[in-house]
Length: 312
Length: 312
Image (tube, rainbow over the protein chains, first blue to last red):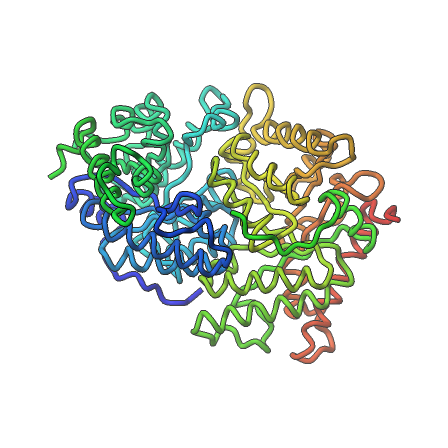
């Protein structure tokens, strides 16, 4: 594909991410997972029957969230499934959301968990990292093997973007295949070895490469081990908050300087209007204030219990 | 999501697939992988700079292919990556292509290799199997574990749709993680055991369930073994033709009655204008005749070397 990227030039991904984290003094990443049944009451989303109207509501909701969090965090993570579920109009809304986040100075991590082989993998990489979507990074599923990851690495390097490869996911069922013991270590440790090799190669002497890992906040012990096993990899840590992970649980994902990890919260922040402690004293139309409170609360908890306080 | 499905009601997926295969007397599945650089010269696609125009060309090309193959094969498999690479306009083109295929009586297998957890997996399943895209089946990546597959199974059963789970993919790199030996058998054999359990459960006494497997045509020995290990699972076999798999290589994916497998060819059929033996004597505007020849050639080869001749 030769459709020109809309992303403005910048440093390599790891340097851009480090700068953004230092500028906001936090590694908090806000997940943008719009869901019809969870939108603030002001959107009256459960009454919408037209996919185009629902997609427009998703776009407006995410833009409004972005306006609140853009001064506070370095990066947002749109969940592609939520937009795909609304069909083509949902995908147009996603493009709008990505463009708005970028216009507000946020990095954008497209959470699609894509994976395929050869030219098909390259089509995904071109679309999400170079072409029309122009995200800064994409999550990638490793099951198909290292040759299936190389096209993503190639495009990421060409476009100063990054990829995050699933290693140990936050769900209980991650034990089924990821925890299988193969030749003395787990399947996910084999994947982690592949991630570290790619991270080191793309780091080319720098601290971090263009290839990172996804490790759930629900596995604090594994976070410690995987931080040590993948010194050149950024670790994206979902599952903070609603899925049970606490700030102390994600500490192991960080290096001592407060870098090396991104910690994700989605529903606890974007749907904070549904949390009594965040919504106290607010009228229905003030849901953005609840989002701001929840985002600040997350940042404070990360600062208290992780090396984020070391960020300068 | 409560957006109503556009798919008309019908039997359960396995029965619909069996009927369609018997009606066409072939298990050939045509992959719809539109690529700018491979479209017939009549489309002049390499000169297109506007994503909307490129998406329209992809839609027209796929509709034209569908018009040729609809009387010949039971099912088509759009490759989601090719449409995503063109951005939101590409996704609108994909919806158009799926609707056109259904209007011509074809089943539609959305090849997205999706995978995520909990409500996110359910959003993918709703979108592709129930909601706006309304495909008959979706490919799914198992790395996240069995609990990540359940939402796809639930929606598939509710909507009389199917899923195909990656087991052993056609690429050389499938050895990296799929072939790891874990507790006496390979990782992909563990996945296959999960597929068979889900297939048997959803079969509820019938021959096949709503859950199938993906096994590459490049692994004939494993196809034999996996056919035996997953008696209740349909096996989708990519890699026929261009990726090196021959008709004799895919024989093991079938049961003796000619059912149990779908064999995919994409580029060899849809871009047959580039194959001299298929394009002989044709003018540039007659590329659809080359597609028809290549589709018939694939069907003949499958009939000669697999149990497809047993289909009645």
